[in-house]
Image (cartoon, rainbow, N blue to C red; front, side, top):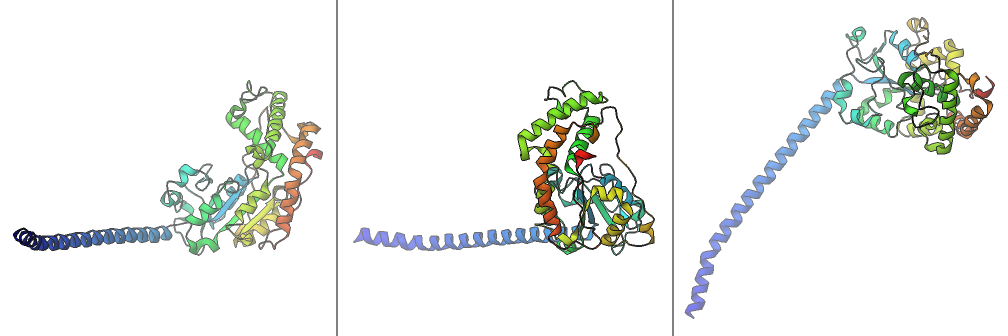
Length: 347
């Protein structure tokens, strides 16, 4: 009996201590929850402030997204001569920001991207009802996930205002132009793994460059659609991916040959698309920039029939799919009907 009574008294003494411990635990838990909610609220408030600040900054709304070696440098230079269109600051070639196509740049965030805009001296008295900044990065179109990253980054309120310009060059011509570009810019260093390219340097003889190019073509065709060089001319896949994020009526697509041969009519349509069909726009002419003249430069006329035919046959199916894609839906205002590419092997 005494032992039972002693245990009862011990439990009675322990009960207030348990209650006190529970109360203190609840107080501590409530304090932790309060701190967590306050921290979460501060983070949300900071995000909201950052979002508002980013929306108030100057965003580009005109993009030249494709394709490389298709006159995009000349087109961008022409736009920047118009009082409405503003150039990015410190961009490559004064046009390419390369934000949505290069992971390292994209990971720097929207603030880094926006640091290129709002600094054109011509547009310092910026009026968002008149001026528009331009990002002319012609590799955006072929960049995997580029359109999704752009849609995710640009404020939703601006999505409908964005317009995209795509210039498509006949794929065999583009493939050759890219080879010439790398040969001049990097002294063929991109192709050192090929036997006929290993000894080439900038300014090499044309016949030696031709041997190198034939070897590059054979390797590209062996890799088929996985070849980076060939992928650049598979436009239908690039456009299909792009149009999953942005509407067709926001995307002006033009054949490079039409831009070069009938520039006045093509540029008149582009002016309507951009809302710049006025006296100032009609004064503009398309300059011929970024042309390369060097000893090793190869033209289509220099190619042997077999090399040209192999490349042409590779692209034929993709080209037909491209025409079907472009012709099956209504074109945006001002866009001329896309004309089939000319035969590169009969030029």
